[in-house]
Image (cartoon, rainbow, N blue to C red; front, side, top):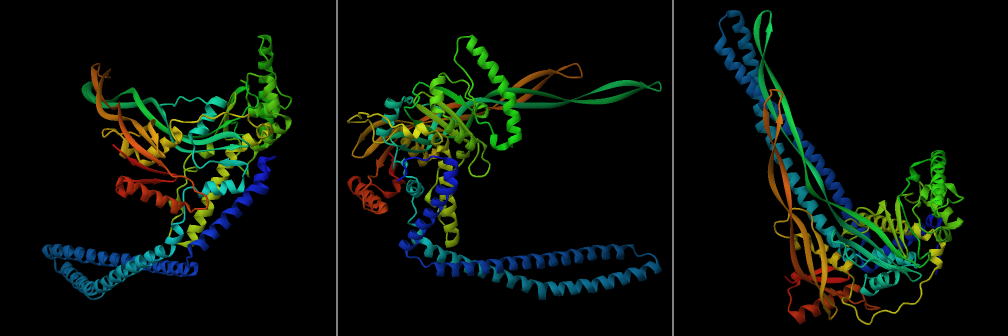
Length: 593
């Protein structure tokens, strides 16, 4: 087993990336064997569906074509009828009468022919085509149901945790936990100094904890709330009359003007933020922050120009800092100094201890990479023993992979989705760790022993509680008058018998339509009232209580079998209706009130 990753960028390209794709493909093949599905039968069914879909589209085009012909014929008949009536009413001259009668006769014959074609040819043909179309749709529906039944044994084998299992198989060094339990959380808080005060403006949507050579971490995706402002604009149009003299005459002129007023009002904003928190005792007093440099969007010539310009600024900063009694000095590697840009560091000795020439080289490769990973798209914060990496590529639904994403009735599509999803998940998570892995000391440093508590307030951390609450759905937990997204925060009520009873508080806003009036002087010399319609957002909260049952991990036992046994036990003991239960990976949850 590898206990170090020496060159994260090239090892992904030459080793871990290809190995993971191979592992995913082999894992999928094992699932296919276990499901005992007939792949050839499904491919034949899908072939028939595609043939019928093509036939359905052809029939649809034919129906559209003949409907168009019929509409044009009917329009012709109506127009001819109207013209004929007008001509008969306007006949006055012998010469024009002959022409008019001729036109009426010819157009009437054509109209009769069209009527014959509509009723005898087109209508029966359209009826047949529509019947054929309905028959084809029914055939397709039956074949889709057949294909679904053919693929059901395979679809039933998929679980949310497969991406995690495959990741661990490819890189055992990065050990991922089944769940973020209270023990791991306690370790991060009391050993490494993680802030243990939950932020009320954040709610966890995804979390996965683990360790690298004993050094703990967790990856999370949070829903973040900020209260900002929004501008609302109102306007009215005014008009007035002015008089001017033109050629000795008094002439009236109407003038118009649009009067506009804008107001700012509080407005709740929501966004998602994904990040990695990593605990390590190396450089235990060092603090710094850095933002991404977007080096991947520059060629080497642009980077050199940027470094040369910024290097002068940093040297001046260092000179001023030394004069003030500070200790900031620039590194010999100007390119790393500028691109990494951690100039607010508080300890030069520990900074150099951490960022050795090898670490600088590997981080530069990561930041400048344009083809293998994501380049320099990460922010990095070090606060003593806690490191926070915030990469842009984790935003979105990259982390939250559900088994349902693999489901399909087409074997080829199932395979493609399974492989693509897990390869993408692996790449996203790997390159989240890459800035940490590029620093050799972070893999070499192993934590000192830690004495864990005998008893914790809950089985799993509040991060897992928040995930369960969010998966239960805002609509089930939010205040009935809330019209915005909700931040769900949790607190433990009790914990026993493998169940955490949790109070969930949903924070949202009730929207009330308001109108504010502002006055403004118009061009007519008068003050005018302008209505501005805006929305007032008033905070509302709702409290609920949920049970989170932790599914124990039993060795050498199929996860789904154990899950079903647990559900049956729970139902028998508490006489629950299965409809009350939510199955959420490692948890079975229910809303108590």
